[in-house]
Image (cartoon, rainbow, N blue to C red; front, side, top):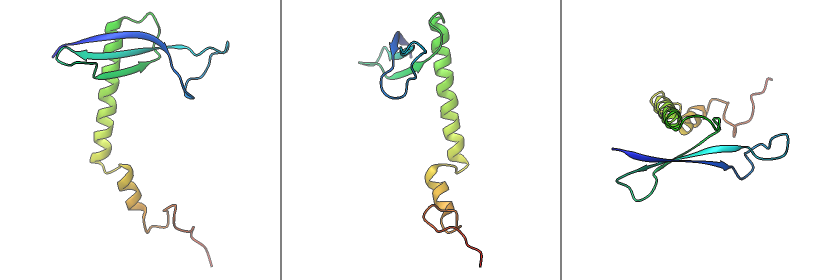
Length: 105
């Protein structure tokens, strides 16, 4: 499978980006992956890497980040550390947010 990649410098909107000292929102990379077999792009990444980084390195680092996050989610699931399982395991132990704190008498 081969893909085309598009790279744009954009300013993020919303509450998340932190303005620079001069009050402007810094430029970030928007990276899109568009496989030849698809009608539109299928993956998107935002990166704060420097403007002069080669496109090949942007793609390599974006894909490496995805693999790390994917492996982390799989490991968390395999170890039973997902949110729903962790919440269920706390029920009845006195550590659940809905149970009152233990008291000494």
